[in-house]
Length: 295
Image: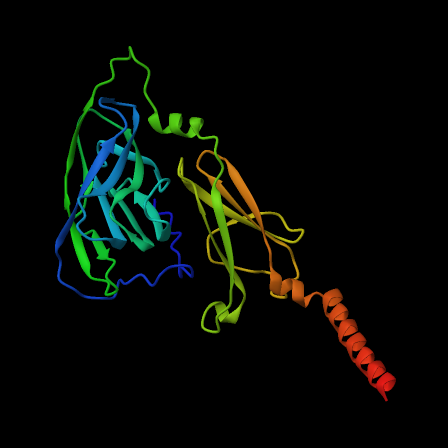
């Protein structure tokens, strides 16, 4: 089932050039690295999609991974440790149609590496195929949004029958259990645009988690409870007087909470405005007093 949590606008993004038309050129090779060499029915294994052999930097990718839903079922998709830092479209998947879709990028460009990690459940014995689709598009970091593609290496995994003598393996759960590190570098930005969200104030946020990956974000305004949401988030308190907290939670349950230091809200506080007025009045009074003394 699609998660449909598309990012309508990525305000910290770098102008993802999806509208430019250009000729395709083979520029990379895609491959999957498996967490285990042998898979049996009932096992959960991790397949890490990588881009390699790039001859030029890319800064964005529209990805589509195809898998055989008769043999495999997606348990989770992680962007932890990905070379892409911004996700206008976080990975969506449907185990009915056998598709995983995503759009990611990095402003400075990358020469390749880990893209996403997929936790698959082996449903039945047989040959389970999965691969990066030819419909996937890479965008070169050339300032023109030039499109390119990857040579896709298909995986034909033989899933063995479970004989019951060995318990089912769950590599993904093992990864989650070993992850004790909270998300890092949680960045929060305040924004306002007359053409977006009816000109209302919003915040956009982003955190990194190289272990299990970010699961979700939560926002708290003032005395209200934390609410699970996505970036960008329209502030309920448009006066900017309430304290704002953002929490990043990874897939292992580790969390990091940061208070947004809203300097704009600080300057709008009545006590601060009063303090400024007092300072101005005092300055004028001192100036007049000095003038009289010199007369």
